[in-house]
Length: 295
Ligand SMILES: CSC[C@H]1O[C@H](OP(=O)(O)O)[C@H](O)[C@@H]1O
Ligand SMILES: Nc1ncnc2[nH]cnc12
Image (cartoon, rainbow, N blue to C red):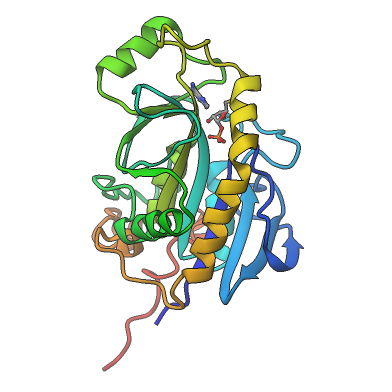
């Protein structure tokens, strides 16, 4: 049995987790550098949680400047089994209106200036990203939203742009024509790294705007995003509190293999592996490095 510990990553405007009890803060260093902020450990009900604001308190890290590897590695070191991230996003669909929570299940990665893997020369791994969101975790988020009567839709594709500038009208129209549902700047490589670290991952995409394609709405700007996030901060807090309160004590095995993603993913032969990289991978590869149990 693996004890479930929930990691919550807060996005723009979400720098705290209201309702967290017995809070303890700890700065966790990782072989990949410093996470965006101190980890905040606590619990809601019987469930332990670890909260991290991805931009740091005071919003100091830009989407391209966030150390995603340090954030995910720190969560792994803290024993986190399941991560729920909250992300503000623009909408490409009329029916995905500002204030709606969308539980996306696919990502398109258009970032180009980020460290997107823990692996590399000396230890090569290829994990599956066919199903980047853990369905059981996502279903629990949906149940929590339902229980709190929070408008929430399951399913959708989040395109992750590099930023920090918002999209041009031509880009916005192209993403809409491609059938993407929402756009943000942070879910990638976060979701990829969570998969490499064998943690379940689900995103609550909080629609804040219609980007710039909509003829009847103003083009997105920071003020409008933050106004919608602030207006919905209470709903996000209630959703997360309910999720934590109702979360099972034991980590539920992931039907798409989030918790065993490294099985059959590592190509580099053991004798050829780079000891320095393996040392950095101590937390990420902890499960696959365990000595085999003798019967
Ligand atoms: C505040 S506007 C752009 C900013 O909002 C989103 O943040 P997050 O995903 O962390 O909630 C978007 O990705 C940009 O970072
Ligand atoms: N329209 C948009 N584009 C990119 N990131 C966003 N975050 C919130 N709204 C956004």
